[in-house]
Image 1 (cartoon, rainbow, N blue to C red):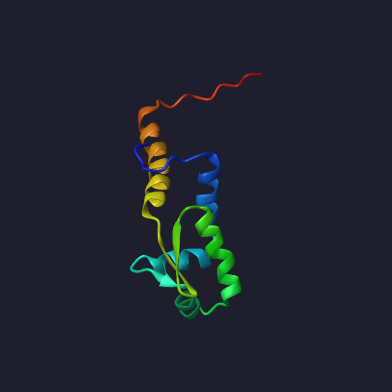
Image 2: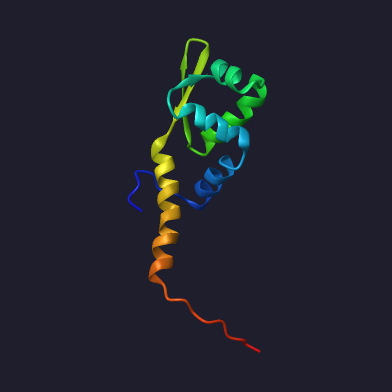
Length: 109
């Protein structure tokens, strides 16, 4: 893997866990085009700030989003290098599966 981020088993698990929730996917979709503050994310998603904060924390812990504070608002944006690292992790399966010969199953009994 040539990524700027080194994936560990825990970061892989955290990344895919973060991607497993529909609301978190919607947050990521909204952040694709621009940085947004929590208030705008709540408005777009029609959810409470407390519920959204839980999901943003999960995304941040997985390294998928960055946050910065400006005044009383926190702004979120995508952390693209972490997406690249997860993508490279998956691509490695494809590369290896093309290189490895299939082995027939044998009955050990």
